[in-house]
Length: 169
Image (tube, rainbow, N blue to C red; front, side, top):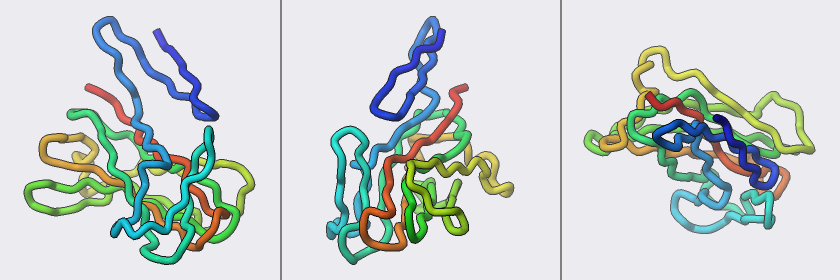
């Protein structure tokens, strides 16, 4: 049985099974993003369709933690954005909490895409062919982070959120 819930403009679907409620994605809202050094420089706008943009100079990357269920297999990463000038880049990393190593799983950029006057979605579903096993989540040993770069100041470049789609075994 499939249920659908509507939150603002974003439609979120969940699957109901006889024994448990399982989500097929994790949504990271704009309010979860912060600068690396917590120096500020961000502005969160909107009451219902919240977005974040760079309001002042400083570190250009914005970061947000991502919590994914243990054992899940990650299918893709999706950035919800508005780009009416400049460009946006995103990288989705997994960090090994024991060794300190980091591996970029997904990335995307709006370089070369036309400017938009609407919210768009940028998706990457390719994981490095050298490490297809990196799709499986090991929550006891790994942490996950998305980082986004906005090439210029002002609200012509906005982040509305980030979505990780996954499959439970």
